[in-house]
Image 1 (cartoon, rainbow, N blue to C red):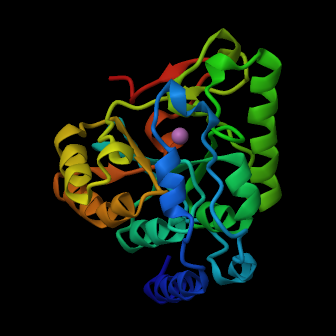
Image 2 (cartoon, helix red, strand yellow; image 1 turned 135 degrees about the vertical axis):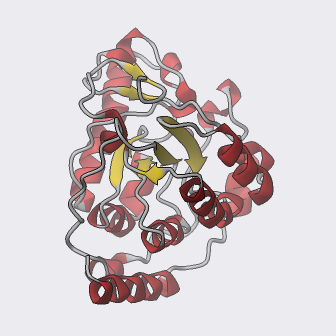
Image 3 (cartoon, rainbow, N blue to C red; image 1 turned 90 degrees about the vertical axis):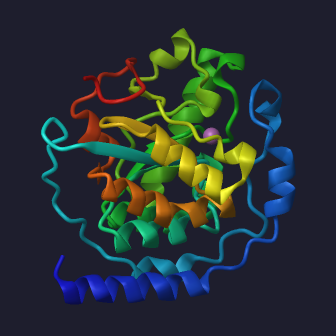
Length: 266
Ligand code: NI
């Protein structure tokens, strides 16, 4: 992407951000998110239904071709779960500004509410993965329910205009034999700053920078303002340490359905 085009894209994304409604339901949503098994009834819906439809025309249409070889350069894959949220485009802007890529594991019902955000993420060269329809714990679901959760989300992602997801991250990292038969690789992580627990920009930043190694998969959530604020410093800190920030397909190469990945095999 040339400088002029990059500039135009940034302006467009900035304009798009200005159009976003301010989140009103964040506190209610935060209060319900407790993590772990007891959170299986959590609703990840965000306040007002997305008024973000005009975004579609304001985003770049062509992703840059990528040629990162993570066998030769030090790569880290940032992953953002549970969106799209009112903050997702701010994360996207931080990534684009720094020439970084990442993977977004979206929840189906949020995707249905904010399809334009998911399309913007994909159009910007980021990868969109499947994180279930409504964030249920899969080990409490039947095989049939697991298939419904996963397929409905994939359909919502495609309906939003993003490529069909090829990567699955189970809510809470919980999976069983049925999950392995969903036809997608199961993507976990090796660096978890527990951003949802601390809601601290400083701790999230510090823990990611201390924990990341070449080949790491970092778990973050683009639904917490504290995390969104940490993203620029995380990117800058990792780049300063010599890491290239890549998508999961770039980090992992060819993946196998039913296989569990926590990082790049070394
Ligand atoms: Ni999640």
